[in-house]
Image 1: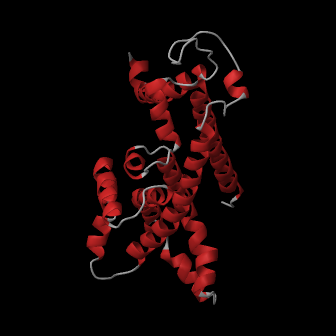
Image 2: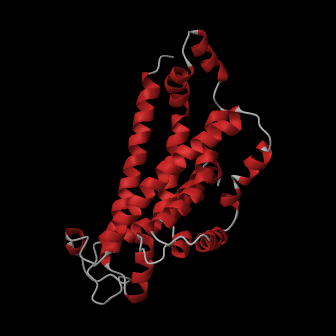
Image 3: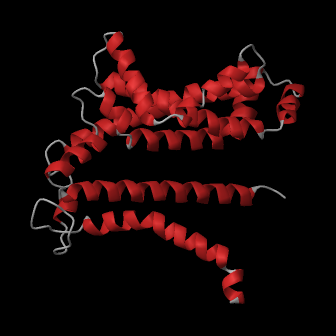
Length: 264
């Protein structure tokens, strides 16, 4: 009983982690399945056919490439705009700063369907044709708040004396920003960028409202589930999960080496 009390937090953490990873494990296992029917819900036999030809299903890789393209551009746009907004909210005092600070977080608080319907009404009233650009604009607006939150938290923790020391050493504003401010804020900016990419890549609700005839990967998965679930979807999901884990491990390894290399 005492052992259970001492390790209760660890056990709870492991159970929670297992609960979160279990769906990914199921997707990975069924990516090696060879179903007899249209639906890949019951295990039949081990097969590598889907891994040998991940683009064997019509329009799957086209939708995947489109989602990756939108996610990359949305990440770039949201990261640049979000970083500038975060610096402005933390470093400068201006009228309506409190209102802007509150409004910028509304997309995080409101349901996605509300934002999706609002953007759809905006695009239709402006006569904009739904497609790639409307999805991109919608994703940038949706991801912007998350980037601001991540970068703002990092900027608030920065020591302004470091920038003052750089200016005392005759560094110009641009040099101070590039050599001091930006490297310190980089972890927050990177976190916001990674979060933006993940949110944009797997978004369905906002995309479904503002896509028109454009089909992204999440919409392809939803449409395929009505007719049958090809194994290739599990292959793409497994590959994305492994890639995400590798990115996190590389980031942790690089951070640990840099911390170890710093003099005490």
